[in-house]
Length: 123
Image (tube, rainbow, N blue to C red; front, side, top):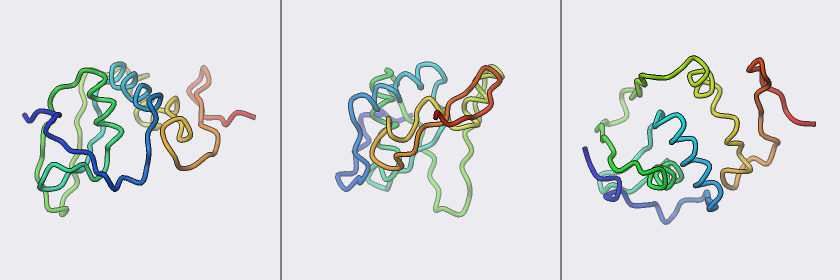
């Protein structure tokens, strides 16, 4: 294990996060735990996942497990201890974290779940 504090944000990161977006990511990590990977380079600079790391720190996550690869294999995160509803939420991309609430990017309305877990866009 490596300390999450040993990771360095990418100063060239085009996606800017707000305090609210970091808080939403932290809330999701507290509810579901970590389930997605990030990408770092040889110097521990975060290439993808700056927001995830910010949210993880806010959620109290202290460590990161680093898996080295040269890009010729897919890295899978095997999660245990999830309820069926949590699995569905992860599978559909956690729609409560819509794009316009997370950072700059797609401004389309976020998907939301109805009681029956179907996806709908608000009108």
